[in-house]
Image (cartoon, rainbow, N blue to C red; front, side, top):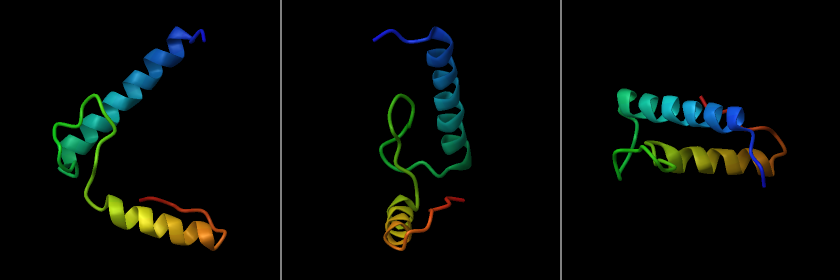
Length: 64
């Protein structure tokens, strides 16, 4: 499948910004550092549970 180089580059930029933000704010959880993977973060389990409850109720989950 051919990928648009501009899209690939932009996605990489967004990932880097998110990884930098998680590390800078100190919310990244073990294992660290978060770069190059889908990171864990403090409160992830709670957010997942909240999201699941909202989905069962038919509403949208908003993560803040």
